[in-house]
Image (cartoon, rainbow, N blue to C red; front, top):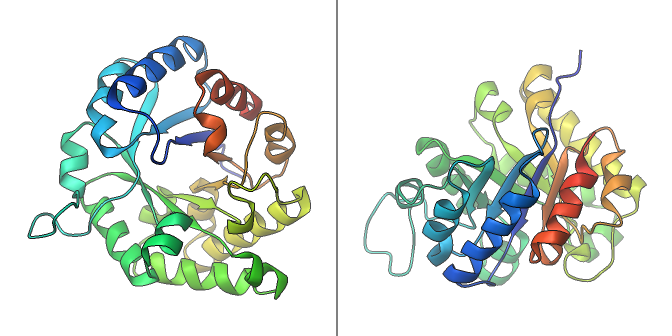
Length: 255
């Protein structure tokens, strides 16, 4: 029997919004979603805005995520932020391995794995991002890339740990381009990821793990994506920067 996964929607602000702007946004969003009880909602502001986001979200159903972390608890790593610091700031989630971190900052599968283990050690819910480039898609290597990234990131995890993860499928060629994977492409990738989790861990863990779509999600395409059986929600970039737009995506995710 399939587990009942409530939809999960995360806003990734990237390098947008000051602490004050984030506070105002989360206050507006919490009013909009005050009667939404059937969607897990997460906002990922920049590091400096985490305390403001936590304060604004206090007492609401909105969770707060960091956009990245370092795998060491402390040390001589100028400019880095640890899982313990993120947890202490009040966040409960963290993005790991976003395509921009991989592409622009050279993060490898080994680095993603170390960051995931640090997040789990601090009891943060990890949102692990995977996905193929345009060249990999055109070369019919999508499943090969997804398998490799999953193998690297989730090596050594237990079934209960896998069950508590969020995996975000990001077709890199569809991020910030306005180009979206077709429902068939998105559905195939999500089904493949679910199958990998089922084979590597257990059917129960695979069913409990949320798998999000993260490629140019907008209010006008979210319902079509959510109709796919293995799409559990969305990781939203540009369309999440306005609270009303993000709210429209949230409502479009409701089963």
